[in-house]
Length: 221
Image: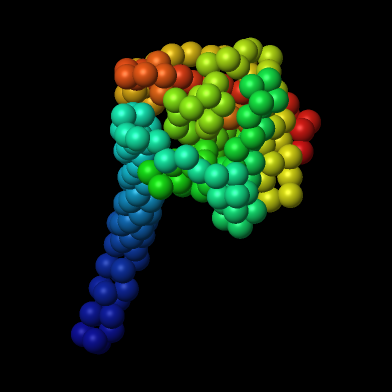
């Protein structure tokens, strides 16, 4: 009889404690889920901050290289060299008819790439895609070379970018001169396809950066 009594007591305790244990288990599981979600959000935040820091660092480096190159002796690239870059290693071509400009675009705004071509900043949006795609080039002192004549571009001028068999046509909508530390020029949004051109200003002993913003119509391919 005592055994049956103990069994009844245990069963009774289980019945009494079951709701409480269920609540405790539910709360434990909920807490774990919250921790996992917060962990994911934290990692996403770290990634976003990391990307932003990478963009800031890259822009500062590109800006510094452009200025350093302005003070160095220019290494003239022959047309054969430029054609070789465009045909074999280039990401694409940038064309601005209003200033008679046609340049190869290389991927990655390294000091080497900036010597003989325009360079797409890898940390920015891909060419022709939604976001802000930035292209930097040296403000050569040789007339018509690289972005030497970029200051002659006007609002409304067309910029054509050819890349990987596609052509993207942008229209200039804003021209500004900013401090070298002003990274806001690289900001984009989730709806516009923006192209940003970056070079030094003024031509000699530059202290600022000349920025040309252009936008692609959404119906463009």
